[in-house]
Length: 390
Image (cartoon, rainbow, N blue to C red; front, top):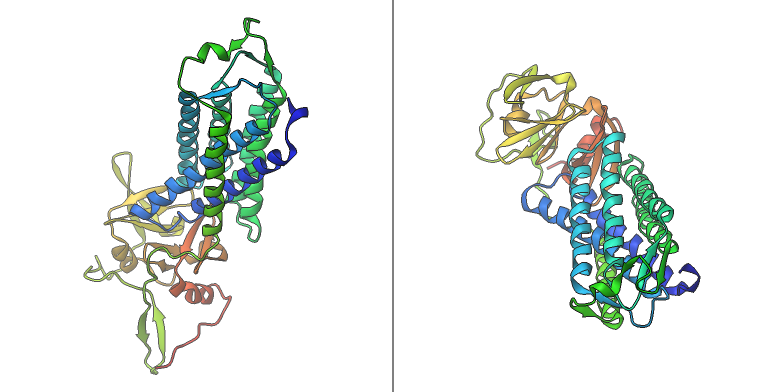
């Protein structure tokens, strides 16, 4: 099968997988710090571009393959192959972004992603209809699934790594390798044989609704343009929402400094600084010591407290938490996020603002709004806070 492939379409299929991976993973990276509709939209967009990249790569690869002249595509298996892929990839992305897992959690997410890639391929392959049967080399089937899972794990580990620079590009390349490597390994173990040879017969499925390879080519071309457009749009500066205007704090000497924004109309729960924070877990109220807290994330009228291992819900609002926590240790870096500054181990620019990484068994990233970047750097000793004189 591989010897007769069109090399230009093979190269295009790999490029499509990489571009889809770059756009999907890039949207997934922007989920941090979002809430409500924006968070859901980014999650759907990430899953959609990843699954469209997988699906489009597969069918560009099929157009590159030397198929029998009477081969056509059954509509139902072709659609089902995409739906399975989108569902499994979406669950994998949600798992990775929602919990920022460690090595074991990333392995589970990679397993789901590899299964999604593999199931899409083999369901799509058996959507071929014609006067032939399809034979698979089981060793190549097993190898293709292993390649999908192993390279997906590498892509996710690179994506979750704290390093800067080409991290997203390298992760996208690894994702493209996972998809195309699995596909062409599977194609190397696939053979068309005469019907009735004791193997799966695609002709037995030919009673369903079919489309010709020419129609598939048009659909694939449109999806390639969609992926390219999504990639180019992703490169534009992020414009989600509005950056909250910084409040102004006047010191005794008349110098004005930026201060963290405060939700209007919300009274702090208490002016006393607490030593531990109540969280809900297993139907009971537990308490987390301040030294264990890495970050707090707003969720409507509640917050989620991250202790370096996991998040647990707290009944305080983000403004109540800000008022109750020691400002020498905690800083509100975003309208929806508070960070324990002693646990910050990394800061990097991202979009109009920045992100910081906090330590722990499961390190995670927290967004910093543009208005708070200078304050965070000053607290980390990276830059002297510049006063603004009125």
